[in-house]
Image (cartoon, rainbow, N blue to C red; front, side, top):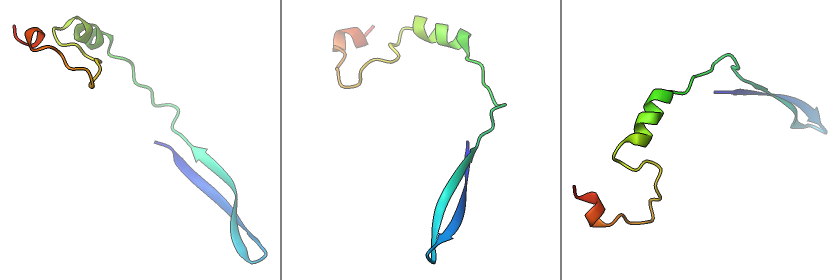
Length: 62
């Protein structure tokens, strides 16, 4: 999650933002779970299929 810090100034009596810094935590890194992804692809269920296309009932029943 990033944090945004803004710096403001007054121009003709109105507060105006003139710069913004985005602070991120770049040290955080998560490795992919390659084993579980391969197992998911080889499973009976079709992951990542389109939701607007119906699967025929013959394919659903085993």
